[in-house]
Length: 107
Length: 120
Image (tube, rainbow over all chains, first blue to last red; front, side, top):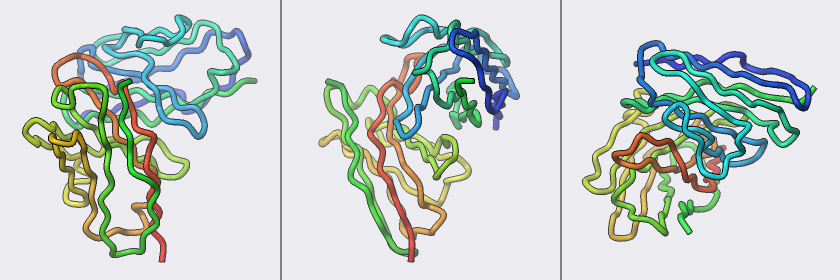
């Protein structure tokens, strides 16, 4: 099975900082990758699908890029409401594995 | 409004059986996979598997194969996750979510989650 590895596992940044989270697949998955945000105590929400398509209603400070094995989620200007854990997920073929998550905090 | 509404929290003893539900509304239930996701306390998201309500085509994660059973009733737009013999390690939050059968999209609508607690 294809493994999904996120880095870093956690980060602390200041409001207004640019934040980048990476996700690497152990084999190519084309662009069948999504990113989710899970705020503390809340249900996960879809941010980006097809590696770079912003889900409706998601702020434009979020963006995704990549194809094949290497993917990136970028928050262009970190806001206090972005404190959450972020997960990538591949869905080209079963199992649709999640990454282990990246916890984002405010410094 | 598109919704997935899950059944309520459960408290069970080890060895007991359980079936939880996930009811879809506001969309064509037959056009989407239903996906089950586990989140153990303080841990990340785990993909358990999927079921297509149209023909009950089912795929399980190797980690959950033989441990749980998925089913779906297309007449009531409801999917189910069941255990025949619960263990303490099944204590977790369980989410149902959906993904379009054909499109290159993610899991765009999630249920509110069902908390399962297994304790003697």
